[in-house]
Length: 253
Image (cartoon, rainbow, N blue to C red; front, side, top):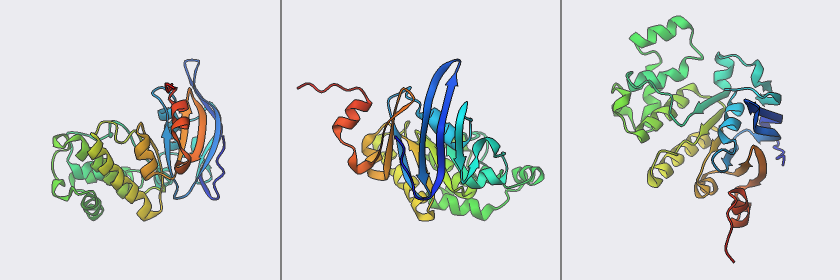
């Protein structure tokens, strides 16, 4: 099912991806408007991570196209243009544990810095004010120079969000951002992530297991099963029947 957005920042057109001959994502199409918040739902193995990686340009489709801001992701390099378009949060946070929090946050600027400035920043952090502002926003300013590995999982996820703040992309792609957190901390983190996106008019696409969090924090939900789009709906239109069908749940009658 295709959702036609008025001003698409993301356009996926007949995109498909296979691994070792097994289809992970069947040809599918959808668009996402700038500033929209889209939750990707589905059971384990449904293709959520593959779809998010395609959307973020981390991998490229075997067929079809994925565009960000009107540019095919296969044509975007790893420099400033890509960094200004999309930033990703992964399940494992992609932080360097032995480095300080400030260095991990400033990694969000690497796509905009040259090699020499990036290396110099390891000795003397560059754009320090940006890092301080970002860490204050996520409530971790006092941990600026602490070794990142000493932080809890929830705190490390906040560092990853601070890194996105200094990167300042138009699109945020988050793969199961709260999978390792308890329900209370998961909700707090989504409050933060949602507000970060809303305050700056950024587009947010996130995969989730919790349908409750999807309906609370997102505008729209795309349901995946076996690499296929089962539904693409405003979250207010989701009901138990639709979700039971997505997860193949049988309700005793």
